[in-house]
Image: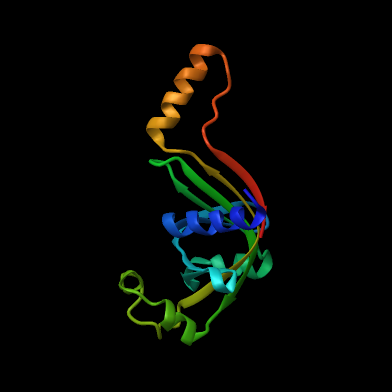
Length: 159
């Protein structure tokens, strides 16, 4: 695959999976939590609505390099994205990203606790297998023959 194909595959996998473990650093420990991603491929960005009361925004302001880990274990597809994050209280962007899911966390897009996290990717790595059944068969054949299984693609991508 060409670099542009690899980059497209990163975006495709992230869009398909849609929930990422957002990992931040507080200066002592990493912290990861599941977040619903708003993928803006045309902006080269991932957006998340977050709650200021949970301190993600503080970690990001101090240490803006983050990791987004997307995983679809049932289909054996994974993507890890490193990038630079920023925090905003842009009400127009919050309204644009607002959904029924957001309503479960906040009363309205005007809630002062809602903020936007924006992640601009710098690099990624993905693992894309043909699925659980085929991967299992290839692993069984490899185990029986003493060979290494070819269970899909693994690529590192500069974003």
